Image (tube, rainbow, N blue to C red; front, side, top):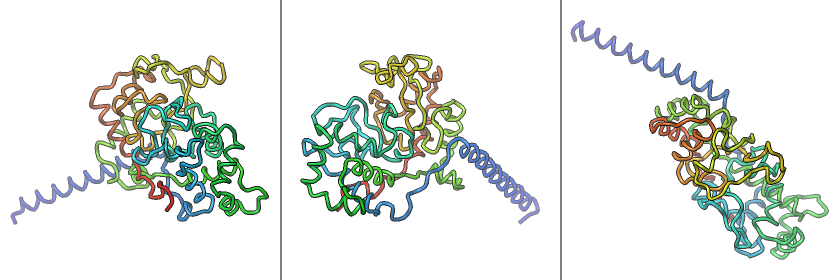
Length: 332
């Protein structure tokens, strides 16, 4: 080969090496920023799903018999096909009544300091126990205990809570459900990127991450769950229902507290698996993720996003999609 050809090969190789180095440096800078704003999640410890309380919680979660109508389970409102959420704007409870708000995903939910749209139940155990006289339709906790005993759960509770004089209690029902739900963690490509895998995100997803931060989304959707840890008014700069088309406004926490500061205040939704959990918002009023992004920009930030910006943000949000856990199914 001529000296010119060798020179061309050398320059081409050098430029390629520089490009790779620049991409790596760029990835490192983006990763450092993302780690500071968000943080990764990890899969549960090996064997966590097989612990006695988690096994009991799994059985209870999927058992339709543990309800007033004998047809409704916790899983009825949290479907595997919808990544642990409900594809309906409102779920139908054991009384054949619609729930007051949309049922969000159960995946990764135990990492939040408050559950439900108002963050009014502080732990998954409290939430699960409350569901007995809520969505599961029992007239009282005593009636729920009667059903659990009639279904033969006494011995199973005793094995899961050894040493307790009365193991079959509604509090332990909640603790068992919490133990199971704590194993429903879904690491995603974003977590692999944060751990150092530059190939985990596509170029468009990286640009989407930058855009997500630059647009201001991370101000509320931060932490390892990208939200779920704060309370915020929905409609900071504009009444939300003007954008969502909601059939009626929901006053949020104000309904419980009667404090003006709590009017239209809800828990900030976590964005883990958000690309697989439509419809969106507390009332399930928005059917698609791109529309939800536009709504949030309009009512929270006072911004109108162009198509390219929305497309990049949606691409990034898709990188938060993990696998449906293999044990998110009825026990065999």
